[in-house]
Image 1 (spheres, rainbow, N blue to C red):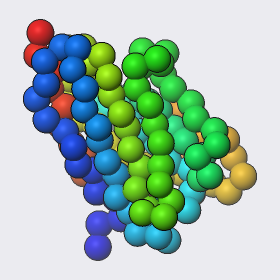
Image 2 (cartoon, rainbow, N blue to C red):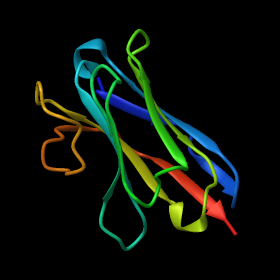
Image 3 (cartoon, rainbow, N blue to C red):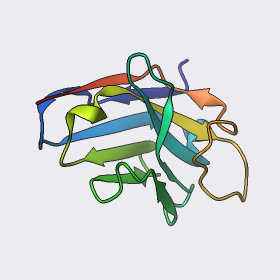
Length: 125
């Protein structure tokens, strides 16, 4: 059973919007979660993170004000609402779980142990 499954990617014009989803089992989901992305030829980078309760969020400067991370713990699903998309947002987007208890949402990849398979977002100019 795959612990995390992303969906919602696609092709969109610059300025458009997409909403990504990350579905998990209940046991996998009761932790801080994060979104990362990797563009071709580039290293994977942090996008956003959210605490297990949803009360604390953290964003990369490049997406602040355009993207919004949220979660529905009743549905074991995390979301990334992406507005004002730019061609430089083109990448494979991954959700991941941070298993640390009591820690704030992390922009570092180090603590994340489970990763999804990724969903492709392509923004045309």
